[in-house]
Image (tube, rainbow, N blue to C red; front, side, top):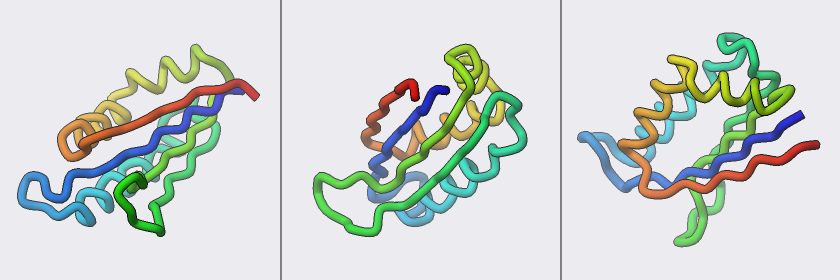
Length: 100
């Protein structure tokens, strides 16, 4: 099994929307992927509850059977829509992938 964990730090404002609005959009998009992408086995999207200058705003944790399944997920059109939104309104991200 592969766990893919990504943390996002959002811009204070983007495209006329506040940080909170863009986070809510991203969280809704992320949560909607489960059951729509065949290789995605589990998904959790959570928001940071302790703001601070070094803290990230949102984390997504995804599980796949293998690296090939994660690769299929990465190019899926629904995932690409989420990536497009995140690329525009995030100022930083960090990710880690591990086998378990």
